[in-house]
Length: 100
Image (cartoon, rainbow, N blue to C red; front, side, top):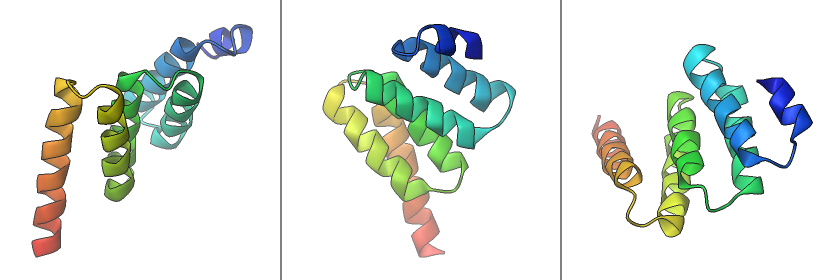
């Protein structure tokens, strides 16, 4: 997988899929965030990358950062059901945390 990124360093899809690999297979969310950030750098219109970056940040305990990323993604793709659902879920989670 990393060979694809090396061969095609300007292709955001390689970084995106590598981010998924790091997150799902390796549970290496630090590296996943780097891959999703690179994806967004190369293709700022890729809403899925914002969503996955936000999820990785949330797993790393950085909920505020995740919230900001989701909002950025919604500016790109306001009708994204996944981003809207994750925004509601994350806001509810953060509200519960602030109460306790």
